Image 1 (cartoon, rainbow, N blue to C red):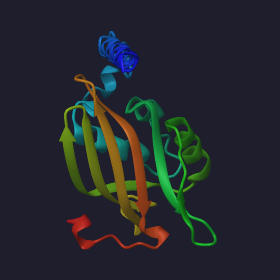
Image 2: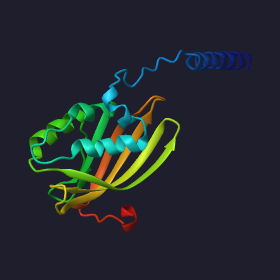
Image 3: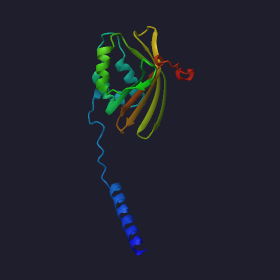
Length: 185
């Protein structure tokens, strides 16, 4: 019994020492980015501003060069764009793209004009985190017929100086879903 108590006391002591050392570590968190671009400061100063900038930068006429520098500035490191999809057999899935992957995809595959307009904006924020549900519609010309609708689920990070897009995860009606009426009002 004495040996058991000594062993238990020793294990508890080692465990406490390990816990205190892990909590006592110096915070080595690195900033998301140290780059400041005065041209885009307004874009990233509010939750609403960064979402508006996202829609603005990807929208334009066929052949119109997008401001990809501005687009890149909106995203934090390791950010992803995640469209949902449906394969030929009707199975739903998703794929992930970095902002650079998205630029390549957009630049090589989108041959028509592309305009994405926000219809409804809902945000929930707490501390450094904000979640935006943004209902959208797309068109090939600014005033042309609507070609699709959907919802962007946008996760933002706030570092006390600016917002960063961490993820944009979306689902479009073209997958066979219809937006609820409440999502457009």
